[in-house]
Image (cartoon, rainbow, N blue to C red; front, side, top):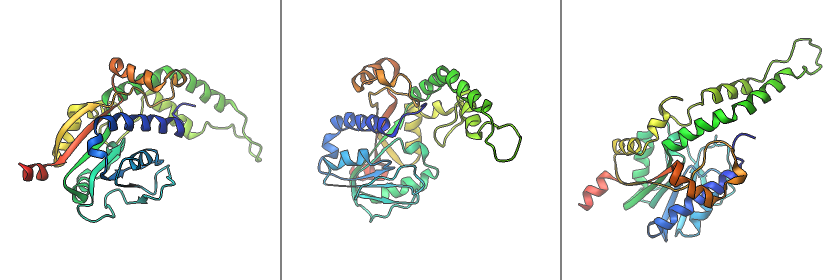
Length: 262
């Protein structure tokens, strides 16, 4: 297995959220919270423990289908909520996948109450660079799997043509030789640049936000299942101070709102 299982990824995501909640408890406690990109619902369940109300949205095309009562689908842009409905907009590893950023961010601002805040967990350049590095460490394993699959005899369905390797395996080998882009910006070669803290500041600023804070979450991991059995959450926290945090926490307020308060 090359990537994290759903349970492993949920454990990492919940650990990230708990680290965030320690720092921003005053913003989250008793708030009306909207989560963008709910995934399995693991983080939404955590938020529900401290929020006055919480609801999550995700795409119907998502690989995950949360079994939460406080969840609904949306089209990736239009949010099915009234104006000024939420105190906090939250997302985790979602913003890098947004295709129409201006439209979605305008919607986020529409549903935010006056004085509301947006808090996003977004990938860092450390995550991108370490994921690329680990892919090369895993390359022999994947190539061996590829060779085993390509040498298997074809199933007997009346044809004598040799079996061709599955297309997805070929693509996987190529992606490990030259890892694919994770989000919607940059290329497989330049994405790390877009995940820098400075790049996130610039991007959110251009979308109409005042960036109040960008800081590391404080957890190290890569995009692959590598030495995972050795990686307790405490160890991941310690490694983040040496190898870099896998994600940033970005705290935002709409520029129009900050101007009004000034």
